[in-house]
Image 1 (cartoon, rainbow, N blue to C red):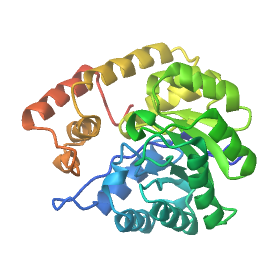
Image 2 (image 1 turned 90 degrees about the vertical axis):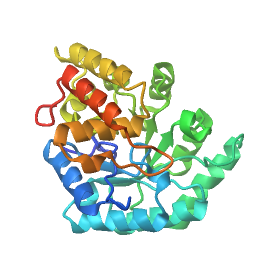
Image 3 (image 1 turned 90 degrees about the horizontal axis):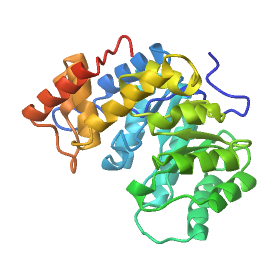
Amino acid sequence: MNFLSPTGAFRGIWPAMLTPLTESLDIDHARMAAHAKGLIASGCGGVTIFGTTGEGPSFSMAERREALDQMIAHGVPAERIMVSTSCAALPETLALTRHAVSVGVHGCLMLPPFFLKGVSDEGILHCYRQVIDAVADPRLKLYLYHIPQVTGVGLSHHVIATLKREYPKIILGIKDSACTTAHSVGLAEAFMKDLTVYVGYEPDLPEMGRRGSTGAISGLANFMPRVVGRLVMQPDAASVPGERDRVIGLIRSLDAYSLMPALKGIMVSLTGDAAWLRVRAPLVALTPAQLAAIGQVVREFSLDLAKD
């Protein structure tokens, strides 16, 4: 499979990786690289680190830079890595983006400014322009990240269109994690001719696949990358309606939990590795009773790393 489209945008599934931690709650570089290599071996085009699922804002700039270097040192190809370089402080976003480009990653995922609320479109544009202009490197590939229920700041059609017009070879795609079908479809109708629109909400993948989306950055792909891949890459396959229903049921079963600890709990249940349970504050790890309940969810939905 070709993991890049003719425009240079990524194709296939690039899981939004969970970040494993040591007992001291530092990043576990060996486990992180092993997880990434396992996902790529399962057919994923690449992996995405330090997004929302990866607890990105919980780690310092130095930790995130070191983790990327360690992944590459442990044998994960740089060109198969997408990095969320988003920080509350714009100079840190710039520094992480420069570093990511310098080591040869595929691309960078960048949120709009997410500390101050009620900012104007012009303010959002200034942030993206300042980073892109300061990096000043033709190797930069940037994906716009829209997740307003987390950031409190969205990306309007005006912002997206303006950035694509000003930086046509740099802005390659949009990751829409608003989890609203109508919004995702609206982006596809407005921009899919020139940009790839990827959605983070797995039940919407078949609809977006039919509209030209060619991949996904997905949290569930940490443990079911093949299923997620079929949803978007083979949206009309006979198995897809049943697989979509299974994914919807799984997501609903996790509604009672904080999502990242729950996803890490699934990894514990599937791998037998209790180290996956650890999270950074302000997240709280699952209790033994919650982990047992997550184990029941794994059995109910027949999750299997080797098959899914």
